[in-house]
Length: 113
Image (tube, rainbow, N blue to C red; front, side):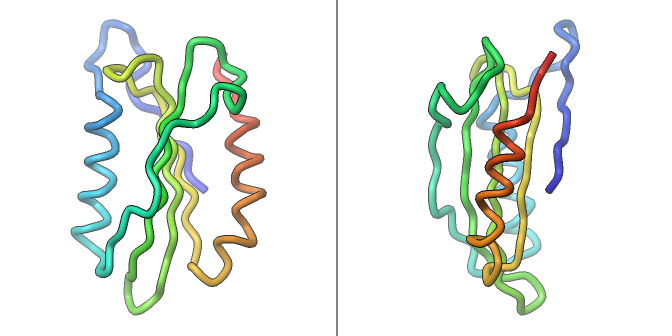
């Protein structure tokens, strides 16, 4: 489970949500085989208690070093042009579904102040 802050300075360089998703996908493709984006969508508004922020998620599956993995990536953003945080949950595919409820709870508890 990794939380990565992006540039949160209003005057600083901006990264779009799509560019953050593209960078994540390219990083996986460069190192893994059998890459697939299984789901891609927006988090429901009720999933985010931080007024003014939204979330986009992508669920990936891939093989790395002969091990199957799944990865849930959530990009928290103010607008499509202003990504703020990236949250990644990565686990071996065999245990991913068992651990996913805990990861979702952790993501839902993420507060931006």
